[in-house]
Image (cartoon, rainbow, N blue to C red; front, side, top):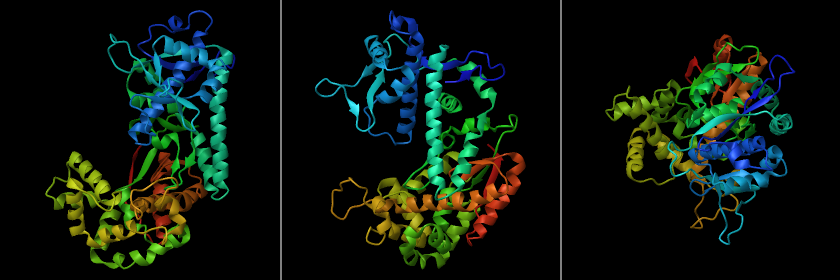
Length: 471
């Protein structure tokens, strides 16, 4: 929802760009008498944003098992942006056949538990061609624009409060929030939306929503302790439009750890890392330590440090190491068969795991031993091993197979936010994080790369291979 008119002359009227379904010929046809067309546009835009967010959650497999085609719409958000009379506008959309509301088995309203939301889905006329396409329109009523902007600002203040609470334990987060809040977008991205006046390009629509501060969050997760912001989920092809304020013509440089997931799996049992930053995993040290001295483990670690693990596996399988499609498949198989898999796998995953076990028997055995740990050995990780409220079929069943992934992500987060980030800040480098990578100004890239290497060296961890490219 882009705000226009807030640059230059302060007397210019503020306008909001909104997205509404392209199959609606005219908003005025829906509102009729007694309803405001601009409020209806805002209502439709909130439905669009809810649809967009749900699409993203489904893609990342984080949606809460919503019915096919349905998406949750928050009544709280509708009230904040569309006045207390929002139900009149929602009912008009239902009566006009723009959306359909899911009903309970008794025919009443069906709420998403704990979400103050109901489930809706779009209804497209049978004669409409083009699927879910959305066009841009403009809202001009000042009081309505203010209501929307107040809601957006409220969400940003909530993020600021979260950053403050996180900084009580790790001061770095307040600075990271300042850097995140210092991000703007190259205006050419906003200009590009003219080419997408009506579009079904979901990636562009997502980037546009982030650009307009309609998706705002700043939080860490309890599982891997990773920091999540809209930038971490932004489609990669649109990160090139990110800018720091004061540098409108300077794209970012990206510093990425090559083979990052394998890399952290090869170094996470470092005793200094575990003892100083991940004490909840200390009991695993005596289990893993014998394996880390074996020749095959040392080979695995060297390949991961050099960023050549996938190519090594491909060469052993007789595949062309320059075949990107084959490489992507090997990467997915490695994740689904070895790193993130359950203790038992089948079919293609089983065959790949057996190949990996043959090449790196010590690594495979170490991963399996970690995946067989339980809350008796790791009491501080009980909620990961046996999530509260989750029922298992067998008494001895648990989620211990996720411990390898948990340890990898927490290792990454500890190194990035407790070791690397403070050093970058100390040197006056502005940056934003995308989990295991950072983006910074080109003039800072060489120093940032050096700091990366030195930070890992301080823990006697072999520094990763860093790929430095334009974002």
